[in-house]
Length: 404
Ligand SMILES: O=P(O)(O)OC[C@@]1(O)O[C@H](CO)[C@@H](O)[C@@H]1O
Ligand SMILES: [Mn+2]
Image (cartoon, rainbow, N blue to C red; front, side, top):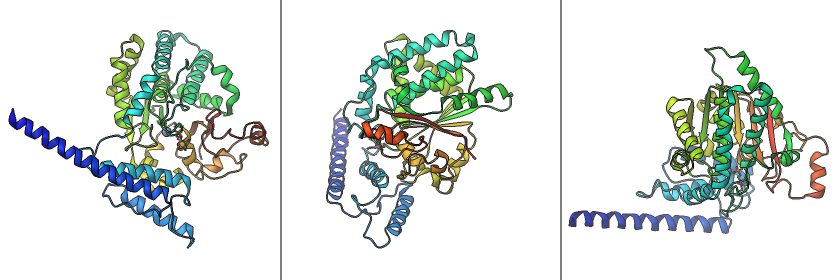
């Protein structure tokens, strides 16, 4: 008994020491940020450190003698990613808190506060499953469009955008879909449907249809992605869904493997029949191998996706096996388009800058100032009445690129 007590005390002290080290690392980080210090190379030995340091050299070369890359001067996308990587280093080097996710609490809260919306969605979906086999093609298409839009608007719930404040889904996610259609600035849902229905109709036993979802936020958005993924399988539009999450805590609410598994467990254990049924089915999908979770360090590097083929050829080759890639969220859109100040009328295909592993689609609510593929005058017209249109999260896109 005494020995166990000593051991617990020892562990407690180790924990306190690790916390102190992490806090001091984070204070240093805050000071560097607030005083616009030069960006420093990473000093940890995590597997991606070399790639980060090479990227810093690349930024130094870009600045072409105009001073060192620094917190206020360097590109926003790079600096913001770098900040999350440094936060990770503060914890990852510090056992026993090396696996602690500083954003876990916020993500769990988002999930619990969205409970009503999750119940509404799971109930709707389980009712739909009861007669999905009897639906004709037109009806299937309608349901696909609905669930696609729920997943699109689910992207409003992100904690980086709301600076950690409540951003849960409060209203029923299915109710106002029709009213929100005018806010979808690029609406390629028909193109997605054609791709999927043609693949289904052409399908042979040997060739499986694979859809990949490059995930964004945990909480309500993740549940909406699960429902969409289940619909794709249950309607036989796809045979496999591959999910891609983040291997380290990222942009506050992004989904890690822990969040992915935690969410399914929470649903299973819920005191609501349809929520729990969803959780049970989804764990079954993972066990059967028709749902597959992946993570890759590339998703938490600062590089935009046009560098993927060079920096992460294994990931690029894996994505090439897919029939359709669904990229969720704003950050993925920024990385798809290189976060440049493109003219709004530049075609999406061009902004992708040769990133075409497979047909792809962005499901994104606008929270940052990059938007391509609009009709002439479309952006200017909204700008005139709503100067915040690109950062308010009120508008969205379902923007497709057929690849090659
Ligand atoms: O990718 P998400 O979750 O849709 O959005 C991430 C985001 O909120 O984080 C950044 C602001 O901190 C912006 O890039 C973007 O608005
Ligand atoms: Mn996010």
